[in-house]
Image 1 (cartoon, rainbow, N blue to C red):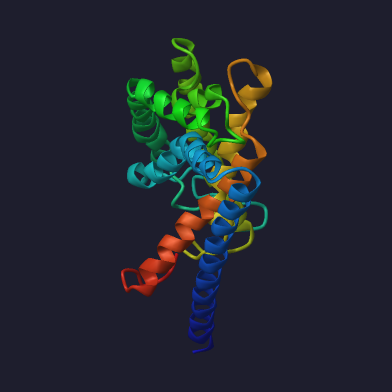
Image 2 (cartoon, helix red, strand yellow):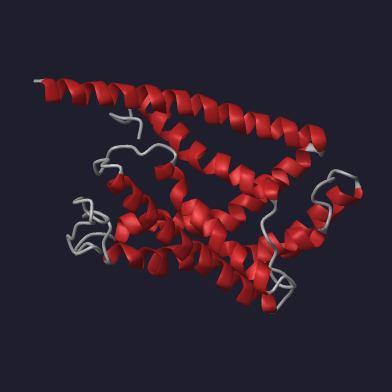
Length: 256
């Protein structure tokens, strides 16, 4: 009976944490918008949002795709770590690793092909906005060009492929690392590991994406501090707020 009570108390506490975190991250997004708009311009915040999404979207899609292709033999082969707990768990499977290859990378590349086809009218809109002084932080068209289409034609396609693959498999490694840490803290599969669950894949993807910027800075841009901070806020915010709203409205039984 005490075990059942402990389970109910833990679930109740997690529900409270979910609601608190949803409110906190909503405030952080609003604060980020107000700060960037005050220091620079509201249009810079919109550009920041777009750049952040464009650079991380292969990681988002790849992270979700592993659930679709997953199943079968676990990566850790059912083995335990030296602490006696599973290394990764049953839900991290070899089939799941195919998700980025079959889904995440192709969809992401098709998305950027679309932006390449639409770049001329997009460029005109950006240049008009820049000419009218709407941008203070992002007033270089080459920055827009890099995030939207990977840079100048035709080398931009190579840049995009490298960027997409690094983001996709950075997300994979981050997800596995998060699972490894979850097992070390003895958190059961399906139970929330707040912030880490929502952020692990994106942080490692960001690290991977940044590597070419140190090797070939003439081709690859390093994500600036504003993008890094925004993604650290946005990534968990999207998941936590969406799940909490679904829970409050009765669409989900738990807010995670």
